[in-house]
Amino acid sequence: MQALWLENNQLQLRHDIPIPQPPPGEALVRVVQAGICNTDLELIRGYYPYKGILGHEFVGVVEQGPTELQGQRVVGEINAVCGQCHYCQRGQSTHCENRTVLGIANRHGAFADYLSLPIENLHRVPDNLPTDLATFTEPVAAALEIQQQVMVSSTERVLVVGDGKLGQLVAQTLALTGCDLFVVGRHRHKLANLSARGINVGFADAIAKRAFDIAVECTGNPAGFELARRALRPRGILVLKSTYAGQLTFDASSLVVDEITLIGSRCGPFAPALELLASGRVDVEPLIQGHYPLREGLKAVEQAKSKGVLKVLLDMSDQ
Image (cartoon, rainbow, N blue to C red; front, side, top):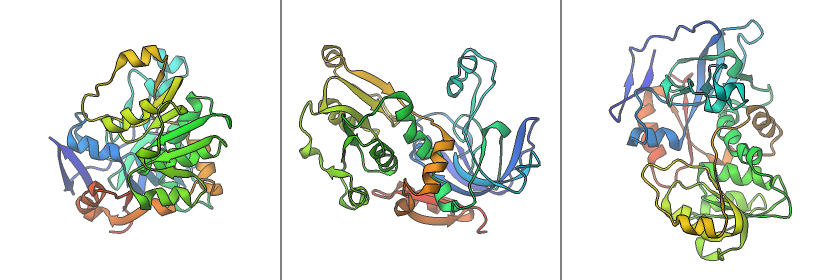
């Protein structure tokens, strides 16, 4: 089968990859579409040592698996877990000590004709949800994880730092809480997507110090972290939603003095993400800025790397 293969920070299109042979408890999924994520780009840059097929945002069709799923469109949670370790037993399976992670750690990913995932990871896509939109399930779920970790109410002022792919989804999901929300970014056209949905937006110079109860950092760069930290009131909550390619330095004493709560946040709930997408309460269509067949995957990745580009999709059925 065809696949985008990463090795020694070099990405190549290969045609000699064997179709996966799912072990017991897993399903063979024919990938229909996959989205290129910032994490994929960071892996190419060397953020984490990975060798294999990239990609973890996908929609596919089950070809081998339970009868009720065969022929059905599915999305899949990316952590394949053991179910036996300390974290799994405590209901914290995304931190499983023995987990593999689709396209990220010890498990081949979705930039290929086929993938294999545990059956328990798969979620059927509602019939009324187009594939283009369903491909966003994983990042929408990641955005929703913030609300699993932090109680966000209408009385709180919330800042989202970053107007990229993740920032757009975090902002839309937080807006549903009715909180006093403000999104800061650098790109007028990206901020316009959110402004059109009634979300207050602006640039960094509009942010006063100590003005927000919660700040969510979605840029993955030190300047974004510093802006989010500076905006927080004492006893505020700082949520880190992006991975950082390098070391991050900050004034730890100020976190202590202001009693700031620092929270890392990543994978989230798929079922509510699918419901939000199917109901249209989260609108991802304006974020799509490119479609490429898998055979042009290297070109697709280059577009995804381009400054200001939002979501680029790979269409495996278009060969």
